Length: 567
Image (cartoon, rainbow, N blue to C red; front, side, top):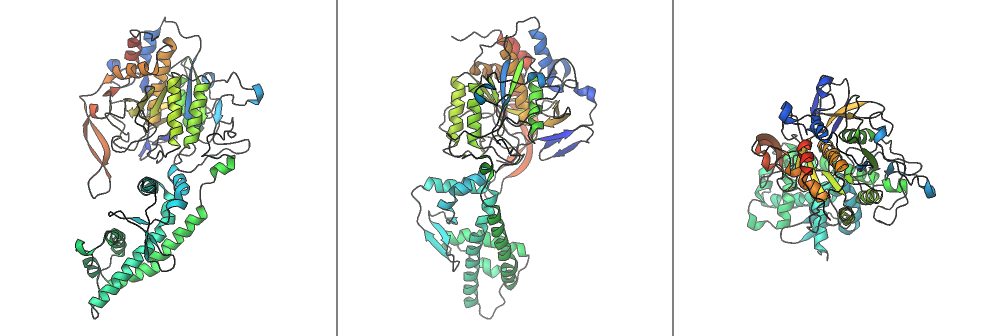
């Protein structure tokens, strides 16, 4: 879907708040020594995850001989940053048989190219299905479909295709997600609108031959629902919008606007769409994104444009705890990086995500943190990701999924992948996360659900490593997920036999409870006949997530001692 809600800002910048998150870098450094997310709400009143207390509880206990391997699937990384260089995974098989994946793999590149921009899923799906369905311009409530005659501009009734479900998917799911589709499809729709208005003009002039026609005369033609077909009713909505834009009551003014401004603009937009064309990013790296067996692509280069993002996640999880500007959560972790995401507004390919999950599992990852989730999860390629998640489940690998930051109720607008696969099966190895702040409130942009979101974790104004020796503050669900990932790695270090299902239950059952707290939260409000809009209201915290609380590493770590090893 849209870009992940995050802002990363370097030091010396002033406080800023916008749609992509909130960053504040004028806060005194001592307040963030190590990061507020390490603090305990019981001791300080700051709603951190009590990480320092968890380390105190672990003092004197035996750690695993082997570090916990965590795979970050999403972004690049600066493997030489001072805070994380000792926590970087090194592939023991690198160098053998020509293998070059020393610290992970960049699925967005090859030996000569690293992609820092890729296409969006909506545009990719539009071009995949365009030849089949793009000539369908309008679907009506009576089950009919219409196109446009390329010569006359008149409507043409079309036969409904055999796969009506895919046609509906194209109209209802793909087109709203594709920016490029708007450029291509606005022209044929506009031609039908023009046909409707020309036909209305003819009828009005026959009815009122000696009258100066007005916009109200036009609207009166469509007031009687018994005299308006579903097709005309649908077109009238678009026509009336154009009429309103003119701001004039004169019908002649509307016609002049239609001929001299509206249609020339649509022609230019269509030509712009032709110049953009279908996505070409995979051609640059020599890959077919719709062939799962085509795997001869990628690069070992992880220092991409978004390496700062991945470096921050790695720092939260495993930065050196022996001093420095900030501290990580686990001191016995190795971080594998698998890059599948490019720019902030781009969306990863399902093939890359599926292959990255399998790579992580096959190379010993015990915990995987995914990157962006999406509202568009196309079949059949989403099955590749669901199958990969099941594969991780079968191998005992925990998967942590940030649930993005768009203020959506996840019961109304689901994001994928999630704990439930498309066939309805619940994965026992997945935990879903959103961000909370130091006051114990939900991050204002966070998605939420008492059924689809498992837990909140500190994820607002989090300090971490960036690139080239720098540090930064950032906010968002990805950083909250990193706090959960780091906590799971810390527990796994002392209790390596804990299963993903046990870990999920352990973290959710031992939160800092906030269920009865009333918090202010913005969200998308849906009303019949209106476009969704963001409003703010009060919620009980228990209405925002299944656990009704905020991650507490100390409580979870202590509770782990009472678990029994499963045979």
